[in-house]
Length: 227
Image (cartoon, rainbow, N blue to C red):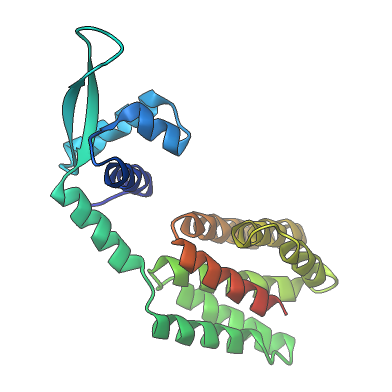
């Protein structure tokens, strides 16, 4: 059963709130936690309920006599799907170290334009086959950096300056994508600009799904790659 990114976000927040409160969660509480309208939260919870990942209950509204509140709790299936998603996207420490070392090696020791073109071609092919969120982000960083190298001039220094001054690692990672796209796309053929925009979009979506620990590791990798 497919959990879209949006459904996973709502179901994950529902599970977190239920764990904190130890009682069914009102859709208004979920809406406040996610920064959306209560009707958006209610509609999404109905979708999750249809999937069998949440179940509703009713409780008396203390403020209005005779009125009830609709509340939701995750089901065992909901927890099972969330756990399966985490296991699928989590990166083992050894796997991450191997990925990190491989990408840093590819980004260094580029002695000619021909070497850069060949390494970029190989990396673009490899990024199509990675599935885990953190690896998608790391390979995307590698591809975007190589496009930055091809642009030449002071582009790399400009991007490094922006990323290094970001207030948080996550902001630095999102700033990186925007800066590369804004720097490289105007200097490239239209199809390359479109390709880079698609890659940056996928990268940004993947970053938002990472755990806090993964964001720290990826931010460290980005800073190391920019040196």
